[in-house]
Length: 182
Image 1 (cartoon, helix red, strand yellow):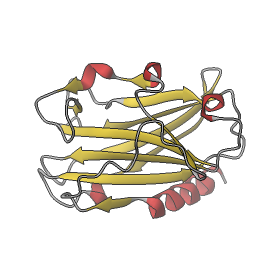
Image 2 (image 1 turned 90 degrees about the horizontal axis):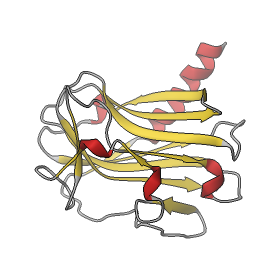
Image 3 (image 1 turned 180 degrees about the horizontal axis):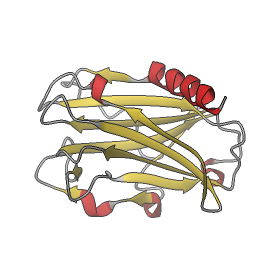
Image 4 (image 1 turned 90 degrees about the vertical axis):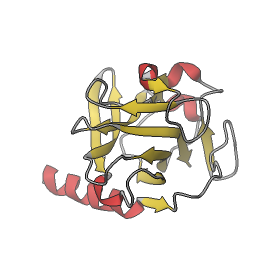
């Protein structure tokens, strides 16, 4: 039964994955932007929530000054980790993640990792496959991925999101943003 639930969850997540043309240059998620549907959390608001800063480099970027490099030395990209209570008092319906990625080849095995823990005990984990969405090598592609918040998620649960380079191939991630839909 547990595997059936995971399969259904993965199928529903896969339905939300989208890629935009690599020539798009707008930044859809502005730091601290607030509207009636979502509250976007970005670096200027909560810098202590960003993880894996050691992967940041300046050589290959989508938007200056930094992008995250994933390779055999560092398999996890720059990412986000924070408690749901810091997102606001409302019950969250969706976790929305957007980022730009550059893959030197189309056959790279990479996943968007979304994990939720409570008191250091993992309560939810999913690795959303990106390989099938890689359209062109050596061009920046935008990914927008949304998934439903698990039912038993409360304010003391902590969300962790990052891109995992499973096969240790070189790739880059930039303009990483996390937002919640209430």
